[in-house]
Image (tube, rainbow, N blue to C red; front, side, top):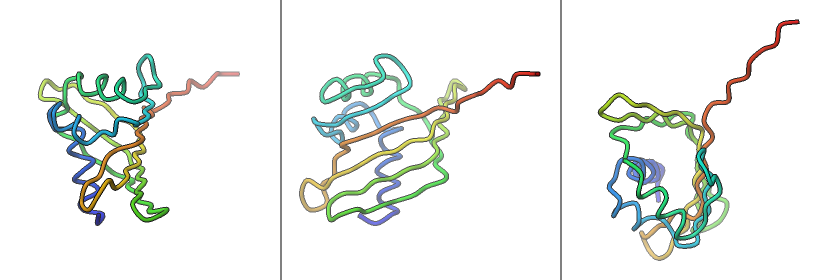
Length: 123
């Protein structure tokens, strides 16, 4: 899968409907998300994320693509997502995809880390 298709695939997971999401997430997928229970696996991961409201727009920056072996793609990026009602979200993310068969890919890992805000202590 070329880089353009990789990023289109990932964007579709943010803005696509629940049926589309369920189709692209592998039943063995592991996820770490910034809400309880934080660590999700298998069907729990598919259900938890496909049942949440979808984003209407996502912009990805700081994009990196790695292909550590044939049929395996790992990406990392910063996501800035928004909804029609003005709600927004930012996170640094990773996703790992594996090829199931020719031109058929599934997500086997996804992680989101929202910005960490540290408060400086005054001495």
